[in-house]
Length: 185
Image (cartoon, rainbow, N blue to C red):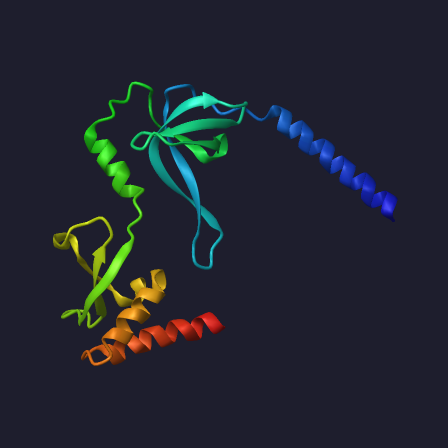
């Protein structure tokens, strides 16, 4: 029985090797602008790629692995050719507008602190006023409490503890409790 399985496994390996030999190498060249596929796990789904960029190809490390450069920060990373797609040809005019959009698309915003809470007039959804690290007070924004609690539960708990008498404190407590309950499951 084991001999039959071993033979079948060997035939599969041989077939895979033949397919690999026929595989075309990615057609990216030095200086090409590309998008990089970043795997993200969607809720209840398989991994999907979220395309970010443009990046610039700066080196070919082997037939399938490339070094790409972030056009804003100049950071470099190695990316497999299966995770790249053309953005445009190598004559792309990288303007400040493209760099700004790229920086915004790839930005991560860190919460400095939660300032206040309110109920959205139209939706009835609890919102938290967020002060973002590195941004001015003018750029504070009202965000859904459920989203902020998912991203920064410790800050939300701290805000709740310091504002236990706020008129919406019970609403925030329910959101915190739901999150705790779902984490126990």
